[in-house]
Length: 73
Image (tube, rainbow, N blue to C red):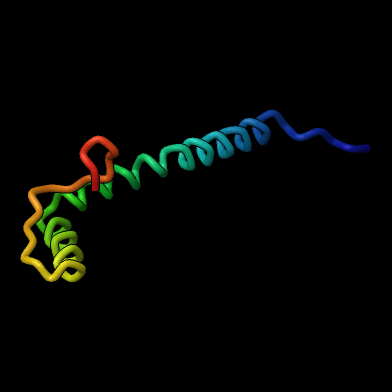
């Protein structure tokens, strides 16, 4: 005789699945936010300026950068 899964196990599986989906949906937003914070930091600005300076050979200073399509990278 086959026994059915108890209700508690089904609920736990649903909660686990629900958490995984929420994490996967929030992950791109978290990466976007951390990327913008990194680019806004002095280290990020120096890194971007160094990349541009290596490509152009000109002295470069960056006031700020972000990944948003409105401000540009």
